[in-house]
Length: 278
Image (tube, rainbow, N blue to C red; front, side, top):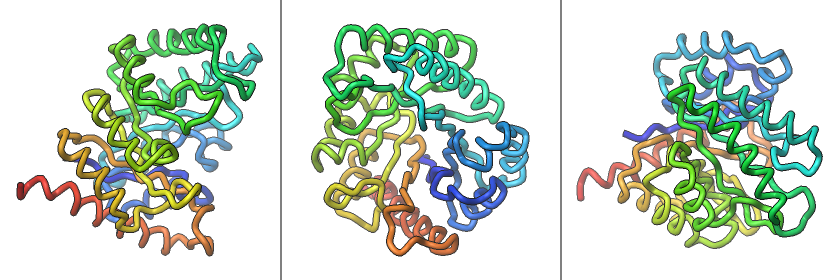
């Protein structure tokens, strides 16, 4: 069965215990814990605190982790930036293992200049992948690379490029970000699902309106179609609501956030449960 989860960054301003409590109230059974969640990131990464919350909330058994990405770029032209970014990515493998996470999602990085990636960028990306490959050999965690929004300097923003990477790296998995795909077209998520469904380990799901991404699902017909496509290929991993609260006006309170998640969870369950009556 799929897991209905939410990114911890939706509750950006709250403590780790509060976040677990809100997720429980919303009826979700999973959290994607961002390492850069402020209450964790700014307090010397207290892994034991997160683990204790997970043990306390038996109703939230499914935990995934998102590696740090803010201010970081593993493919940076600046060797110091690239080095610290790769170090944080590898460190997040260990943190995810300690937390008993199923999946670790990472970003691919980008060319520093806003120009199409070239040969030198491919070499930097291989250095990054090599470090992750070595880390993957030492644990059973699913390390999962995320597709990015289309941009001139993006390294991973087409279904074909993701498929090529997965074929080249059989140990690697894929986190499908629906909003990033929708930035191309309403049909783009279906192309990712068709080409890469056998390696999807996590799905970041959110809606878009115009150019605004990472919105609540709000019973969108487009979102219903995406969920049906995932259902039809037999996807049974996490469906992770990745909603940017800064795109919601007026800014929602904690109770309003819980209500948003509960509504989206019911919608996702409806769409995925349709498979039972076909």
